[in-house]
Image 1 (cartoon, one colour):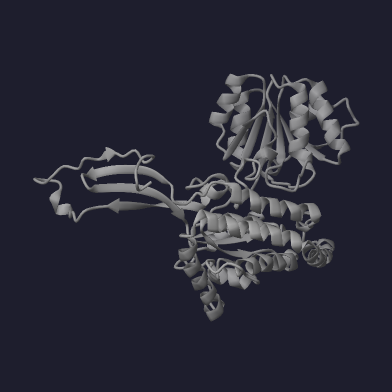
Image 2: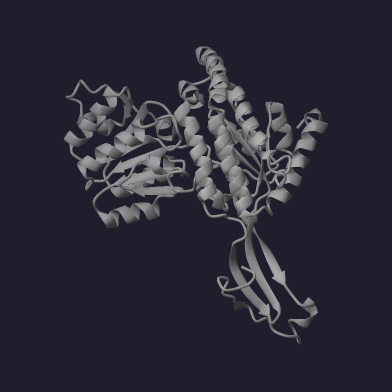
Amino acid sequence: MNAPLKTNGLVEQAKTARQAALTLANLSTEQKNEVLRAIATNLRKNASRILEVNQQDQEFAKTLVTEGKLSGSAYKRLVLNPDKIEQMALNMESVADLPDPVGHCHMGTRLDQGLDLYRVSCPIGVLLVIFESRPEVVVQISALTIKSGNAVILKGGSEAQHSNKVLSEIVRETLTQFDFVPPGAVNLLNTREEVSGIMQMSDCIDMIIPRGSADLVRYIQANSRVPVLAHADGVCHVYLHEDADPEKSKEIVWDAKLQYPAVCNAMETLLVHEKVSDALLGGLLVHLQEKQVELRVCEKTRQRFIHQPALQLQDAVKEDWTTEYTDLILSVRTVSSLEEAVDHINTFGSKHTDTIVTENSTQAEWFMNQVDAASVIWNASTRFSDGFRYGFGAEVGVSTSKTHARGPVGLEGLVIYKYKLYGQGQGVARYGGDGKPFLHETIDVNSSSHS
């Protein structure tokens, strides 16, 4: 990248975050929870201040929508209200109530008498989280990174800049109340140029988590020198198996598409076995159409309803099967077998979340084993694929990568591990060849004094 982007101020901010991470890694669980609950209190106290600046962002975003520079779904995501602010505070408190992921011993091996090896969870270090539209991400990420002992540098979209700024200020103002929390624990970048510069600083940044459009994620993946944890698309499927229960099908399909269509875990493609009755499928499609959903269907599906002119069906094209609409648009395909449904998902899906609706447990288990996705679901909406709903307190993002974390990334995805070896003066020359053999005995980490 261009050298001028690496300003002294940006380098210092990254170094401050690095130093903060070293201190945060060693805070006690009680200290971290005290901070989180204090932030929750201050969010509630500053609700009117948050709503006032969010109104400024809404006015600016409306202009962007009119100019075609911002989607309607992105506008909806930036809007805050009293309920959302209360949810932010509750998320802080729920993360405080979660077990601390740091310091857990997951493996113990006795190499020799007096030479014990342990694998212990520890924070990743400094995270750069880039997101669009949703200002509550500032609070969610701050909660998760503080609890997991990581420092974070945040960069939100310009459409929510005032909301992002005030929320980060409330978090940072709260941190100053505690002398054990270092400066640089939570940081906010202001410009794209700063992002371009800081994502080259592999000496200071340990991981980048981009949350937003596929274009944003792909740009970060292509231009970063730092490991990236992310998903580019959320092309999620619901498959109605031939043994699908009609009432379950209705609730799941309608919820997966209509409950909040502007998010990555909303259904984008409905797959239907050819033996599912026209009455059930037709009823589903009529209801979706009444809710203003545009229906793009395969030829097989169109032929099923050719004598129902009330259903306004458009022809699906190949691009529809790979498109994340995040809008009131749905692709529909009729398939002849479970195998065809799974092949479609593994060919066109984004490895995010896929659901099967069926009363056949054997077929459901086969589907869940064969579909290559971060979350696979039986008889429930794709919308459950979420850190808060999974009980993670909140999520830093959703990963479709096959790295140390996959799916909704909560606290457990924000820790890595280190090896701790406890010796009594040994050197490797004692072992191997004519020396002593290693014991390599498993240690019960639950009873070990080092766990």
